[in-house]
Image (cartoon, rainbow, N blue to C red; front, side, top):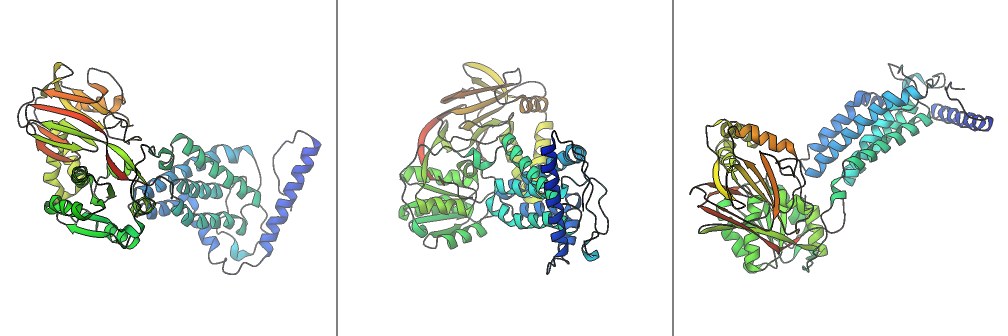
Length: 498
C-alpha cells in the first residue's frame, strides 16, 4: 500500500527518508489490520464514533464537573478549551497543509469499519488531536482526573487506526498537536498549580499524624457532612464536632480549650468566626472549605480534604495577614473583604430570597432590586475629602482581577489593604458596570483604586450597612480599617500533591 501525500521534499535524500517513513507507516497499518484484537471489535468502533464532534469529551467534562470540586471544574473547563482550539487548528491549518489520502480498507475486516467513512484528508488525525488536547488539558489542572481520562483518550486514538481511517503517523501527529495546544493554553492561562501562593512566611506548626490533636468544628448548615466524614476517614485521630450555626462561637471556644490545632469546616463567615477564636487563644488554624463561597481556603491553596490532611500530617503552615475594622463600639476582623454601600445591601437582600429560590437566583433578584431602587449614594470622608460613594471595597491583600469582581490573591501576607471605590453619581448601575469593566488600577470619575495599610472613613450615617466576609452588620458614623501583618498561623500544603 502506497499512500498519496502531497509533500515537496527539498532534496533527494530527504525524499528517500520520507518514502521510507511512509512505507513503515503503511506496514504498521497493515500489521494492526491483520492482527486479531480480542474484545476490541465491540468497543473501539463505538468509541471512535462517540468521539465525533467532541460529544464524548463534552460528556466527560460534564461528568468531571459534576464532582463539584473547584479543581474538577477547572480541569473540565481547561480540557474543553484545549479541545476546541486543537479542533480549530486541525480543521483550518492541519488538514489543508498536508493532502494525504485515507488508507485503503482492503486489509481491514468489515466488522471494524465505520458505517460512515470520513471524507476529509487523513493527516493529521482530528480525533487524536481532540483526545490528546482534552486529556492533557485535564491532567495539567488535575493529575487524578487526567489519569482517569488518559486511557479513554489513548483508546480513541488507537481506534482510528483500528477502524482503518488513519495511518499511525496521522494519529501520532494529531496527538502531538493536541498536547501542544493544551500546553499553549497553559502558557496563556496558567493553571492553579502554577499560581501557588508563596510559601512564606513559614510557620512552625505541629505535625499531626492521623490528625491527633486536631479538633474540627463543622457548621452543619453548610454542605459539610461528606467532607467532615472524609476527613475523619483520612485523619482518624481527629475529633469532629458538628453544630448548628447559632452554636458555632460557643463550640469553637470549647474546642480551643482542648485542641492542639483548631479546625473549622464551613464557608467564609464560619472561617472568620474560627479565626477570631484562634487569634484569641494563640492556636494555629486548619481550614476545610465547606460553604457556598470559600475564598480564603482556596486562596490559601486548600481545596479539599486531601490538601488539608497532607498539610496536617507534614506540619506545613504559614503566617497570613488579618485585617481589623472598628465602627464606634463595634469591631471585628476580616480575612477576605470588607465593604459598604451597595454590596452590603445586596447581601442582605439576597439572604431574604436565598431560602426560597436558591443562592444564584437570589443573587440576581437582589442585584436587580438594589440597583433599580431610588437611592442616594453614601456620604463619607475618604482620603481627607468628603465624597459621595456607591461602593467601597477593601480586600485583605491584593486581589488580582479585572474591575470590581473579586478574583484571587497570590500573597496572603503582603501587608496591604486593596481598596476600590465607586464614586457617587446619578446612575449607580452604570457606574458600577463602568468600574467593573475598567480594570483593577484605573483612575476615572467613576472608579478609584489605592493600596494602603490603614483607612479611616468618617461622616457616615448611623445604621449604614457594613459587610465583612459575607456577614452584614450596622455601623456607626466612623469606620477604621487596619492590617494585622502575619497575625494568623494556618495550615496549607507546601508541596504539590495533585
